[in-house]
Image 1 (cartoon, protein in one colour):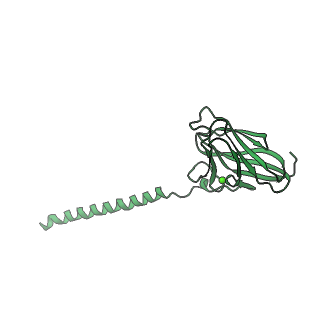
Image 2: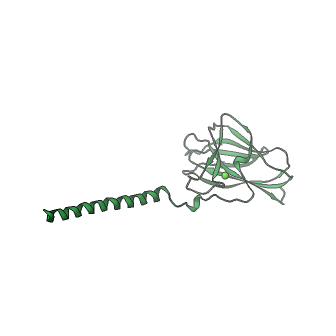
Image 3: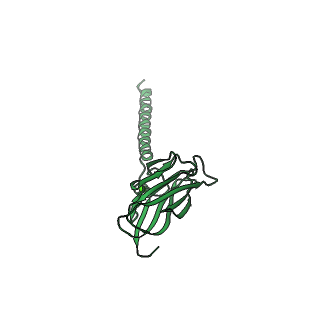
Length: 195
Ligand SMILES: [Ca+2]
């Protein structure tokens, strides 16, 4: 009887060993999947003379637009300053949103806005002090930074200077709700050249 028990015990021990091995390997694999090493793409972007969008005062918004800070660390394509953007949602056709630019001294300033693209973002016209500065189509199949949009050089005094975003349509490939907007922030850089 003892001769037949020894192999049986060995089978049991081997089985227990295999189960433990599977548990250990599975746990390590789960940890690696759940806690991936941070990608370099997800490190926040550093931009000189940058003002975060959420620090701009909203002086006017039409309709029932919602303006919220959105964390961008789950977006895998590209990097955003401070790992966030100002997300403008619940936008209807012809809606507009106006910010105030923080200017403390009269000078010439180059303005460069950093926006985002996504499958449900709209086409927007951007105006500085009511003067047309750019038109952008923010549609993309993926969520990604739109790249710098140069709004030109402007002579700005420390009065109420406005940065207006006006929705003018959407790409034919855009998906509902079509007209959204994401803004990382704006470069406000003092320059010598005149507008
Ligand atoms: Ca930002």
